[in-house]
Image (tube, each protein chain N blue to C red):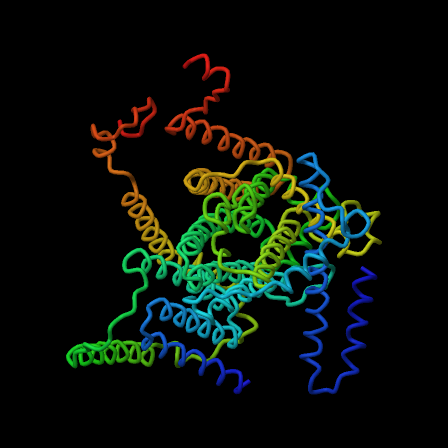
Length: 182
Length: 392
């Protein structure tokens, strides 16, 4: 079991380092996907199936594809020039990284979850997750749903054709009766 | 039941032959090799059946030269693909170019691992089996992107981006329409979903109002998800050459086709599992025929339906495809979820059936009428040669 964990950890860390160091941004995204998969494997090894599969579904299936789309539509996956690096950037990056790590580490160590006994992995089924999501944590769930709906509506609003340009005299298309511009 | 028990006990006997240290690996191999070989063989048969059926629809013979009636055509095709030159474009990323078809095939094959082929006859029994299926299916999008990007070809990249956009859009109605079944069965595990539909054809989920609508939505989304006609925009020869497969030749191209077909088989098997009673016989008297037979029968019927659709439907335009997914499929699948909730809270029965049917039919007719009124698209006017001549 430890050997499996060691292999997974090695792959995860190596791909994470590669995601930071590679020149080609698309390669970085693909390495990041391997990292996401490695994290999902860690969850699965802890017999947290639901979290593991959700991790693959959300991060490998959706987030990485989203990053790729954003990348290709903005800069086309050009190679970055890392030659003109600035020591100040490194310092800022290092500071941000340490600060984030510090906040997360203190949060985890102060949390009561670390002091409570590890739950029996057999009882932590999908059913328990679903029940606690819809009973105990229903308010955060609803808040998240609202946030996602707002994001979806906002995205649809951004993607809608602009109303004024559609009816401009430059458009040679005749306006049809059921046009949404009115 | 006897057939599955026989297979399982046979497997246990064979596993005992291996030295103790290798038994888990050996057992896993014994579970996977039959699945892989069965679906590989089915791929060969179905390619021939598809060409024959399409030929029949188009009033021609189809392949009839290799062997009697052309039955050795798949073997000839395989040999042809294997002996073809494997061309990798000069500026392509060689590693990613190689890994993309393999990744696509692996993601398609992994989906089969959670399909129950018979009573207790499932390769891996996950508690969240269907989640695994969809999670792995999501990774296929990445493989398509890698194929398009690694080829360094504008057509390939455009085709792959179109394919990904289509797959993401149709994944939402796909998952939502299967959620209705999971709500009714009360489990994410596919064997339990099948067990909930035991007891003959009348207890299959397709006969409930939400199951009927869900099954149709699921099948349409499946067509789009595996890039079958009429949703085969990513591979539209007339527009994008062959999409993400443009720069592939030889056996890598064959692997793309194999992956596409295996993904289609896996989705059809999932459809049969979710809505058509899985491995259960339609009548309790026929229970003596083993479960795998029934699952494969339903699967092949669904595949034949797909071939029929391919032979009769024209291809959709890219914008029509997106509008259909977001404006029609998504609201209908959400409505289906509401109907399922009402059905469950009413506890089934005739009254719940009528209420559910009214809700779903009302949503379907109301929403489609609203959409057709508000859309800018007018009914197409066909002008024939004589008319235009007369007009000019």
